[in-house]
Picture (spheres, rainbow, N blue to C red):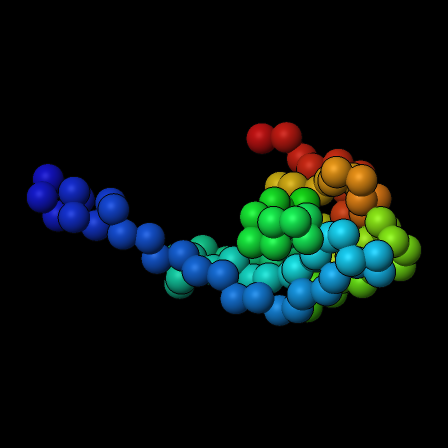
Length: 121
């Protein structure tokens, strides 16, 4: 019991930012990053958005087990393009988050072989 109590409070997960881009009008920030929990779980790519008013308060708008890198590019003042490879295997795609909009931002997904909405467990 003591062994579990000690290690249950440790967090072995980490995030490595790939890129960060400010919107054309400067109101929003987008970033893509890899979230990794070590050898027992596959890394996932994520995309998050924040307002320039609070640049460290990011909210994820995409998360999945896709071939990286996942790239973000602003194609309009409030339109974000997210580009990535296909899901690893058609029969085993793990797209757990995909938002088409966030605040006033429209999000376009390009070059992804993704289901139209996340699969429900």
